[in-house]
Length: 280
Image (tube, rainbow, N blue to C red):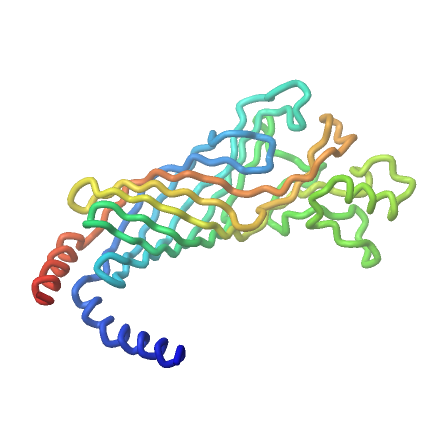
């Protein structure tokens, strides 16, 4: 019986879908705005990093009040700290991180009276450029620099006999493994290399609130948060990298304010009205 009901609903949707789509048209859209960002887990607090948000997309109608949005964006994220927070901070430096992503969000929008829309979706971002500065100079991880990779911690000595430490988040657990594998090591930093890479892929959850301003123009507020870490990193009690005291998982965290211009919005509204009259 349940299968019969599901089949009936699917058939009803297939019959109704052409009429629903005919009542509306696909609307093109362009975006321009800015991001206020931080990276959770980097010892720098606050949405103090600003970046560019720009791109284009399309709104595909599903019903008179529901649309699917497909976008292609250039999206800048990162973190910023003007100077040291305190003298005993685990990261007592000025810091500036910029991560450039080519991003593809897929959103579902529910619209009330063609004025206010609420959206929820996911996005995939590909890291296409990064800059990381400490005290105004390129961040150099022990002579290695930075780059794109797995974003994990690694043993300095490569061996198939050593356990994987890439996803460990407890400094105590890491210390136990180090003592077991290298009983003569004095510090973790002697045998474990800090991560010097960021993951190339960033998957985010997205939530939107969009308001109509004028014919075709909308203001939109978007919140995004990484679904998986972009990097694992050790922090130390002093700048000499002597005593590692914590491992942090890092996530992109951003708020976007953007202006959206919709093409064919007037024509879409006219089609909706015609559809309503025709249904009466």
